[in-house]
Image 1 (tube, rainbow, N blue to C red):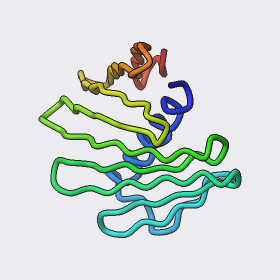
Image 2 (image 1 turned 120 degrees about the horizontal axis):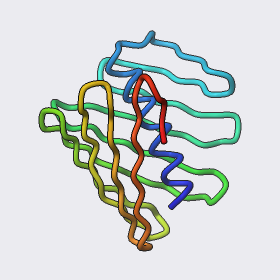
Image 3 (image 1 turned 30 degrees about the vertical axis):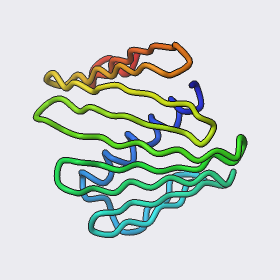
Image 4 (image 1 turned 120 degrees about the vertical axis):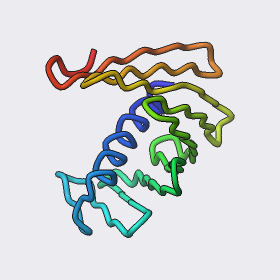
Amino acid sequence: MNRIFQALMVAALLLSALAQGAPTQLQAQTTHCTQSAHLLACSDAQGNAYSVASAGSTTYLRGFEMQDQRLWAQTNSRYGQLTFFTGVASNGEAWIGYIQRVGWTTITRVSGSDGTHSKITCSRLNGCY
């Protein structure tokens, strides 16, 4: 679940870049990204790959983790300030959760098929905790 959570955090950053109209060619340290109108695809020096595609209020995330040779996919559906998501990995792991925006604060809750639960609160003033 921890690696999936890390991938979700990367995907959230990718979504942020997509929503802000990031330039066509992005480069942040060892991550290389390419963007079209509705798709952002990235890969890093370790061989991990991620993509984010949008269609209306639905966002599709896909990824590959080199270390575990694992594919994963997640679908997000946004309703106002609330986003619900579900995901599955090729090793059978699954997760479900939501993201709630309250002013400058984002609260993310996720539950995994292995019984883990996480809550992450991020704000512009205090960072994430």
